[in-house]
Image (cartoon, rainbow, N blue to C red):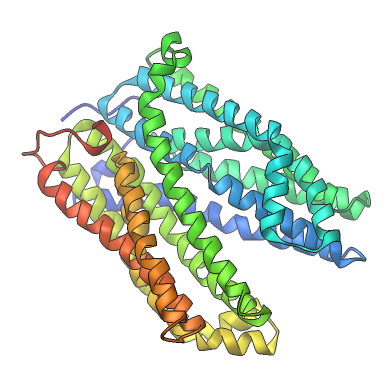
Length: 466
């Protein structure tokens, strides 16, 4: 087996019994991700509280519209983190420091290019996004002002994605926690200074976010500089400036982008169909989607750990390490899933009451609570296997799982809400089936590749090498 890689974290857990080492590695990578996820809703609460105390509701509506626009927009470019993680983790497994360095350079240049393009196209993108969100005239005007400011930090946001992916590929998830805590802390403090202190409105919230994004980038680049000093290899100019050198990165990221667009469509379609049933159903479904988000906070951490560990194992062609990493991530994911299902079944009504004090919304949300109890059992496999396939850079298969899910989702929605007349239950049934098909498709691919590619007897190319 190859010697430990010089820039990988020291495996103090190798001194543990062999059965415990994979669990320790997964947990060490997962807990900073989980903790950083928890800080995200805290920022949303502060934004809402600060703007919500302004004298007119249009300011809160404007910030809500603008923030929603950027949530969807930046979610679409999440491939910059995922693709960088998968390729970097495999380079770490191969002990190819030059590739690790150049992947960082390529990803940062790509982030800068896309970020600059977003700034250049900010006006048409804002117009399209706000047209789709369909807010009031006053709220839309404020959201347009908010967006004009927020677009200024697009290069910083996307560069941070690349930096986070690069560090995670080297099994360093604590950088994620440091950057997220820094971003959100600076954002919260500036929210209070600009809005509560200086009397600014929605523009103050936007400027706070922009400054926080660039502060996080400065921290990230400082951490990158420290890491590069300890890293071997060298930057190759031809790998950074020749378009042909980006082929693998484009292939991986292109499939991830299509996969993310499919997820965005599925989520937007669900929201649109919720809205078509009236404000109460829309609000109730929004409350229930928070249950899905709560589950994802835990499952994301273990999926990220799977990305880094399986990618390194594949780079090393160490299939025993690969299997143990998947098994350990599976154990933690199933424990999280079981806990979520139990909490939702026992305390689901209490959670609904904490999320809304509107009696009608509470009552309607409670009617659909059983779907929330079921959802984690089906979603866990899509989260976990997404992590495995990102580590393997098997992104075409991830795209296919989304397409398969959509091929069931849309007909199921039409049948359940139309001929069968199931109403909102039909919408949730379709969404659950979409999740189940995604999980089943990825599961089928995983079982097939375990026999044919991800094993000691396999000699064929890996999915990411095709």
